[in-house]
Image (tube, rainbow over all chains, first blue to last red):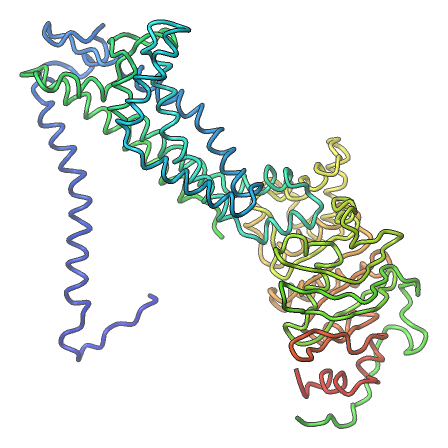
Length: 292
Length: 280
C-alpha cells in the first residue's frame, strides 16, 4: 500500500466516512448499468417470453403489427453503417493524428487539436441537418434516391473522425521519447520512426479509440435517422435506403403498444449488448498495452 | 574544500603511461574544434576542442550538468531533435563536416551509433528490434538479415540466451540483456563510432560488468566515446579521458589526455581534486 494507515487513536479520521461513501457512489454508477439492462429485459419480456429468441433473427422482416419481428435487416444495416464509417474514419483519423503529432509545427498542431475537439462537440442533430439538406441531395443527383446507407456512412464517419484523431494523437503522444530518440539515433527516417516504432508502440491506444468510436457509430440515432432513408431492408447496395436499430426505436416508439413495444425494447437490448461488447474489448486492448 | 594529498601509486594493465594503449591508433577520428552548445539562451558547453582517437575508448568524466551528454548528442546531431538547441564550432569526421546543415543525417547516424543511459529497446520482438534499422538502411534479404542479426547478438553475448525466443518481446528481457540488445542494435549497422551515455548506470553490478567487458572487446574495432560517472569504470576501460567541469554553470573541458595520466598525474588541480574524490 502506498498510503499509511490512520492511527487508531484518532476518532474522526476522514477515511471513516470517505471510504464507504465513495464505495457507495461507485457501486451506484455500476448499478445503473445493471438497472438499464434489467429494465430493457423487463420491457422486452412480453416478446421474449412468447416464443424462442431465434424468431428475432429468423423472421424475414419487421412487420410488428402482423407479429413479425425480424431484426436482422436492421442489425445488418447498423453493422454496415458503423463498419463503413470506421473503415473511412479510421485511416483518416490516424493520418490526422500522425500529422499533428509528427509533421505539423507546434502552433498549427495546437490549433488543429482545438478544431478537432470542437468538431467532436457538435450536436449530432446538426450533422443530421447538414446531411439532410446538403449531402443527401448531392448523392441523389448522382445515385438516387440519395437517402441511403452511403449517406449514413459518410455522416457517421464525419462524426467519429474527431474522436479517432484525438484518441490516436494522445496514444502517439504517450510513446516514450526514449524510443523515438533511440530510433532517430539509428538513422531511421521520420517515416521509419513513425511506422516502425511510434505506431506499433501506440497500437493498443489507437485500436481502443477506434473501438470506442465504433461504439458511438453503432449507437448514433438522430443524424443517421435523418439521412438513411429508413426503409427496413437488407443493405444490398451502398445507395439503397436502410433503417438502423436506433432509428427504428426512435421512429416507432411514439405509437407502439403491446408486443410491438416489446420488440423495440428487444432491439434496444441488442444494441446495448453490442456497444457493451465493444467497450469491453476496447478496455481489454488498452489494458494489455506494453508494461512500461 | 580539501586539496588532495599525494595519490597512492596504482599499476594498470593497459600499456605504459607514455606509449599509449595497444589497441588503438594515434590517428584522430573525430576532430572537435571550438564546440559550443546552448539550449535557448543557456550555454551548457563552451569552446571545447579535442581529438578523439581512432579505435580508442575515450571516457568523458565530470559532474552532472557539465555538458557531457550534450557533447555526445552533438556528435550524431541528435541535438536537432531538441527545440532551441544551438551548436557552434566544428566537428570533422572522416572528411564530413558533421555540423553542416546539409549533411546526410541518416548516413551520419548509421556511422556514428549511440547507446543511451536507460536501455531503450523498442516494444517489438527481439528480432524486429534488430531488423528494423537494417531494413531501414536497405538490407532486406532474408538470409543477410538472419546472418547479421545472429552476428550482432553473438557479439554482445546474447545469442545463446535468446536464440530460442527471438520472436518474444524485447521488453521481457532483463535490464542488462536489454542494454546488450541495444548495443547489438547499434552494432548491427556496423558503425565506426559508438557514443555511450552512461550505458551501465541503470544496471546492476553483474550486468554492468558484462557490458563493461563488451565495451573493452570493441576497443580497436570501433571508436568509443563513453560518458560515465563511475570513475573506477573509466579507469578500467578507457584509453583516453576528458575531464569536464562547470564554471559559472557553463561546461568546459579542463583536461584531456591518456586515461592513466589523467588519473595518476593530472595537470590541473580541479582534475586532481575530482579524481581523488575531493570535489564533484
